[in-house]
Amino acid sequence: MKSTVEQLSPTRVKINVEVPFDELKPNFDRAYRKLAQQVRIPGFRPGKAPARILENRLGRGVVLDEVVNEAIPAKYTEAVNAEEVRPLGRPEIEVTEIKDGEQLAFTAEVDVRPSIELPDPSKIAVAVDDFGVAEDDVTEQLDLLRARFGTLNGVDRPAAKDDFVVIDLSAAVNGEPVEEAATTGLSYQVGSGGLVEGIDEALVGLSEGETKVFTTTLMAGDHANSEAEVSAKVTSVKERELPEADDEFAQLASEFDTLDELVDDLRTRLAQNKRMQQAAQARDKVLEALIADTEVPLPDSVVQAELEVRTHDAIHSFDHDEDRFAQWLAEQGQTREEFDAEARADAERSVKTQLVLDAIADAEEVQVNDMDLTQQIVSQAQRFGISPEEFLQRTQQAGQLGAVYADVRRGKALASVVRQATVTDGSGAEVDLSEFLGDGSEDAGEEPGDDVTDSAATDSAATDSAATDDAAAEGTAAGGEAGERPESAQEPASAKA
Image (tube, rainbow, N blue to C red; front, side, top):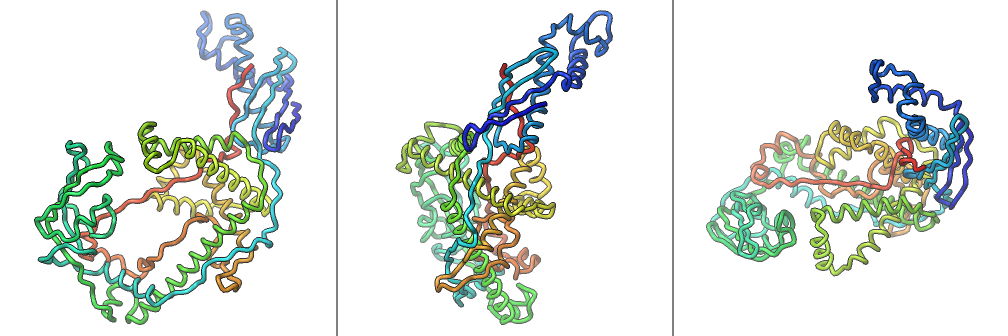
């Protein structure tokens, strides 16, 4: 086989491939076996008809089509490897010659990773927020921990912020009841903002047995984005009584014997959390500087694919109803043209970010091992609220395991750049965040939360908390990038003669 590469643009090449018929003998053998199984010829058992008989019955063209369609994907991959081409997306295949008995020739146009001149990481300088833990922060964490072990007691007074109420809800749109919005016996903490807009203001001041009707916009269901009249009836009001902050509480809620030890541990964990937030901020700012300082020609097909995914996801959230999507845009004060322009800019930035981090990973020879992948799978599974085994199965079924690998590799590449960059705080002092960067496999844009009391509380004690029994549960979901396609999984599109 002979192959050559033409550079059509910084991001696109044409691969010319010529294959002698001698190399296609295994393809012909498989084609004859396949066709013999598909065609019933009198006098021959299924699969036993000789090649000459099959050609006489079906015609030489049918055999050639089968051979060409099977041979081209393998020969394309062979040419890509031989010419060290790094394709992005599917190629456009065109058969240019089939000279029976002599040669098969075809071309493949495909987008490729552009050559990128990377900036010197050591010349990147960013500033992050000052690090510090205020005593008010420690007190807030202690109060959050006390709240987990609080008890709920019924009160004979109107509901106030932070009270726990049990309510019955119903809603109507244009006078018609909305069944999916109706519920009874719902436990809710006033002021938590976990339900529809306006519910907290409506509940404040209501006593047991009282009802308040208010107007709001429904956010989900068949009547999403519709204005509704919501009726909220309070059936009970409870306030949470916190346990005393003393040594006895410290022994109940943690592994420590004294309150001072517990408070010191909370302070230490808060400090660690703040440093992790600094590290996350540094990653974001270094990435922003890196992207701003790097020129990257963008492959059109990859940007278009990313744009289509983003647009599809946006409209999908409205059940693919273009009219509802247009109405939502109007409510946001945005035209479809403005949305499309913003989505394209986001898609271009996403693709540019991926290409730059991939180039850094190549330059740094970043490796991803099984432990790196396992940690990423466990982390992503926790975000979706499913087991790592189920997440892995879904990822494999969707053919996205290569994308997980690529995300981990990019994260490690970015962590490497952050370590080489100069990071200072608000006072100008250089900050060493290497301890908190890990191997970079975590999401570079994720900031840890401020609540550090999880590690202080024991599982058994938290389970026994009366407040936990009365509180409502919440769920989370996550999404991901769409631009990456594992190179090993590239398949050529159907050939056109």
